Length: 313
Length: 259
Image 1 (cartoon, chains in turn yellow, cyan):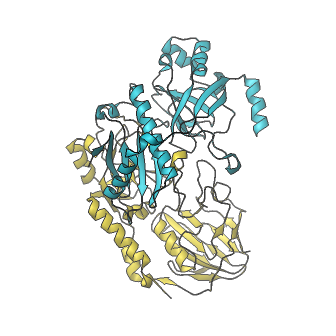
Image 2 (cartoon, rainbow over the protein chains, first blue to last red; image 1 turned 90 degrees about the vertical axis):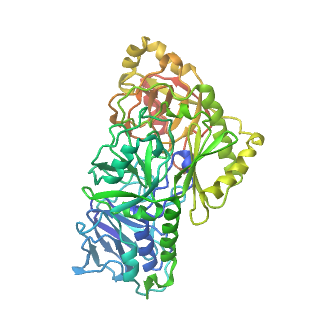
């Protein structure tokens, strides 16, 4: 069984797959890769099933040595990766020989870079998923971010090695967006018309304290509806809640399952992966779409993801 | 986007989820109850009137039960709460109204659903001191002695309305009228795991160290969310809970025993 030696963990690197759906009644949110599209594509490039576990690096990548040969792919943002000093390309699978070291640096583009390895990262599953749940300290590699000296096992499943590369067209269409499309939130009618207009007309800045639980926004203060509070209810991934104080928060992959703040909007499913690439201080804005458009965009995205010519051999 | 159906109301939550509300009177849903991480400054009134909440919550539990007994392919997850259920579904497979019509069929059968006999669990709590830093303030706010607060909190039997916020966090009600206290104006950045808090007419135990705005009156050495061998969450929706006062010495012993 192959092993990845963690020489440097990077800023915040966790084992992630596509998460664990189905445990909301226990208060457990789905979690999973912040940019699921990138993880899915990376896995396909190394011959894995889309939901195999990979490493999610945040803002600053790590340094990893492969004790045996491994087929790898890097997807998501450009962290200036080199293999034994030689630059390696994103969105294209490549081979690391036994003893070679992959080094990643600070991001040159978005927030997250994924390292996928043929066979996937092998960890004990928690509620059916390899995804690290930081808050509860469960899942992934010992329920925490990687540390120097960790040794990660590579799964045994491996098919034939053949190089694969994402097509330019796919790369363009799956480009993360800074204008996020949203549908109306379940309490959007509670907000006065002026508050909604302000929300859609303003640019927001991603706050430093954003993480996998929530993306906190700075910018125009959204007047909170009078009464302000409501009875806690289930909240969706990508829900934009406005707590007292009027600074919107986008609930993200490791979200709380229920919340008591009114939600003005919800990021559409087709744009959720874009949230995973938002860095602190990035500027974003919101564009309202109707339910049909949101559905059509998701269908289009999944059609593209399912197409045969997405990745060239 | 809201439509009513046999005491239930549907609302689109996202492009792949919808909310089923059993709150009947829309007015009541503007009342109280924020998440236990707080982040709010305003002291709030009570949540829904208890009778409404109980009846609505029973419907939530019955619908949840029916969805467990007869899962709908394409429904990925459900998040129950006091008087609503969030249903997450596969948007490539379903449109909202299709999920809604399946759920309407389920709602018509709620009467026939029997909920399992509730389990009664006892959670040992060491009240006050470093474990319950807000106990003195609760006494002051409510004009009660320390012993009275403990007695009031530990003598009631609570219902697990739902688990939410974080894994294993049970929203327990109802707190004795005499103990109803607003949450902290400024939430703590970190509440130790096991802390027992009160807010409005709710009480609960923080399973993990998280930010929190509930007033802390004690702490339990019991792990609220454990590993697989122990079935993960100690409490489940619909369970009944009592708190049993223990000394600091006993807390230490139990902590060691269960470590």
